[in-house]
Image 1: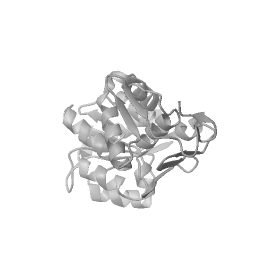
Image 2 (image 1 turned 90 degrees about the horizontal axis):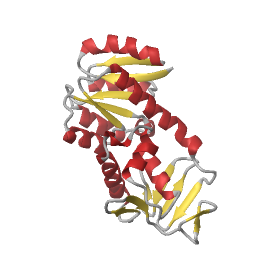
Image 3 (image 1 turned 45 degrees about the vertical axis):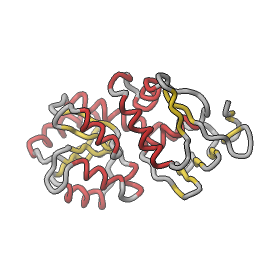
Length: 243
């Protein structure tokens, strides 16, 4: 059973949502304040967070930033943000801060369950889907897929799980152009028309974290590709060519 933590100041939401999500093998705990959520995270392991955007003490966006800047375990935990409006700005800000998905209030519990299943399936399958090669070396960048570590000449690079998966997907096929729709389908396992802007946000975040390397190239009206030269030869990670 997957353990979820709901952070939402609407106390009436937790009980019926917990009852519904139990049908999908989710065990939901709930807190109404970020301070209580941080205390629970320090003591317990959760498989995903459901985070409301409007909270006392600090808003959901500040809480998301706090979690992503915390311990290694916190940085890996999937976060689904709830927004009071279907406002694009809220979605963009949440994704830029490291949220894995969003859902506008009011929402259908079945859609929430489906999105949680997708996030957790993607997280669970990511290591199994990795190619046999465990070390991808490029000029100025190294990706250790066995330990899920990324480093540049300046040191380790902290990526969210979604950012990491996108980087590995592109780096395994250097020079290949991936469209936004293809990227969303590969990462989310859903139809790509949900939010194609999310890909641009992910790439923008990754570029900032990888600076000054110019690892990700944009091809207008086509998509993105990995552009760093392979270190020490024409292959990376034991046999994948960069053509």
